[in-house]
Length: 130
Length: 374
Image 1 (cartoon, helix red, strand yellow):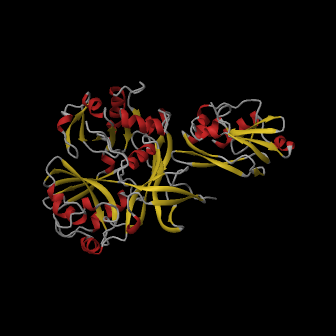
Image 2 (tube, each protein chain N blue to C red; image 1 turned 180 degrees about the vertical axis):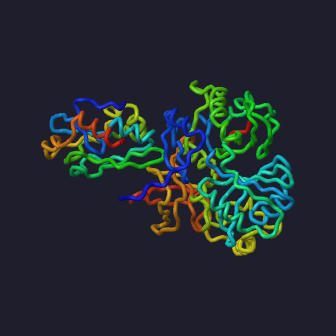
Image 3 (cartoon, rainbow over the protein chains, first blue to last red; image 1 turned 60 degrees about the horizontal axis):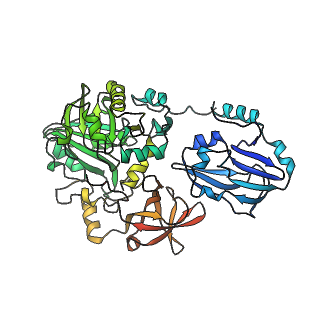
């Protein structure tokens, strides 16, 4: 059973958001990393890059597949997890911790409210797999 | 209302794949495991260091019998089947009149009047039709026996030791590209020292109703579950293994638009054996020289090249990636591509258009990986 921490917000594209003041820490969910398989490569933006909600900010690749990643919130990238260049497997091993991808300074803090709760995300993934 | 999906074919090991946590995908009309819980990287590495087990029952088989068996087949394939002895196999290709590839295959000789052709899953029906329609008045009996065989491949440095626990044939006496007819765990089987990984290993052909028994016994003999035990491997690992070994995949490096000479398959093209379909065009191409060539490359930049991406030199599109992927054992990102022969030299710098970003790569000799001498 995939892990879905209570304290996070979720998108239908299988990203999670942890709110830390005005910053949104973003990564992909346990369900997403499981579906993807061994992550061998992560392409991330640089600090200063700006995105709007639902825009692709990078990609994560397994041996067989390439998956784009979309930011659930708008804002400017404060930091990207560059350690994923040499250790992409962190995304598989610790998707909510060491496998974090970017930190965005949110331009509109209200956007997180339209994301899914843990329970809603769990229902969503269950329905998707049927 | 949408049309119903075409039903996929299943091998005799389908239930086992599901039970073992195999993630199933469509391949060539078949429902096959792409990976198991260990994951593609581990499956690949374990095959190179210990052993990997592969269900390849989706491959097709055509039985050819009669006094004209060898002469008939030799007219349709590029390699010289008349050179085979009993118990020997050879890699070969069915060719079009243009010298391009209908399919790559193995030709097994059981006796001078009995051959078995082993062909790709997705092209089995096409090959069968082609072979049948090209029979003239030869004294041969052709049978599509694909449903009569399961096929399981055990590959890796530990393969021989594992299989020997179950086989009565002395496996070390079966030379590379030869086979024995004996039994494995009491099951009558053809045991062939062939494979698609670049490792030593065997492919076992048996009756489909014995597939589960063979699979389970081999896992057991190979200590599945131990850190250094055999692992079942899916199609993703099968692909990365053959790519590292520089082997072609039908539909990627070879198809009906690529000639054998362009695809580095001159070594299975025996222009002096006598006439065969496409020989004239291949002879002509040999005289004129090829225009493009299949090369191997290594990505020297950040990024992974993927199938179908454009290859550029000095900003000009010159070719296309036929297969591109990470190489889990070599820990590099590699691929193969067709480029004009003038730029096919080792060391040449090329660029690959990876979804809009130009990624630098270098032409390297094939194969990428060669197993260590034992």
